[in-house]
Length: 84
Image (cartoon, rainbow, N blue to C red; front, side, top):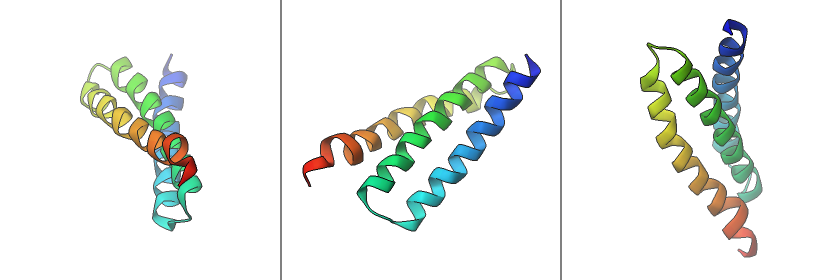
């Protein structure tokens, strides 16, 4: 169980860093949408990690909200924005 929690924590953090880098490079709509999808996976990992650790529920709840925001980004950049 500890190995799984560690993997969730480090994947979530690493994926967020990668997604942030992609957004900061401003490479266009497709890359920003891809970054938002990576943010979604990061949020999912950190939600799981946060609720599996008794003292980390705040991170879990924060990522529930970030998941919604990131899903809006996926919608905007990858799904609804294809024709733009």
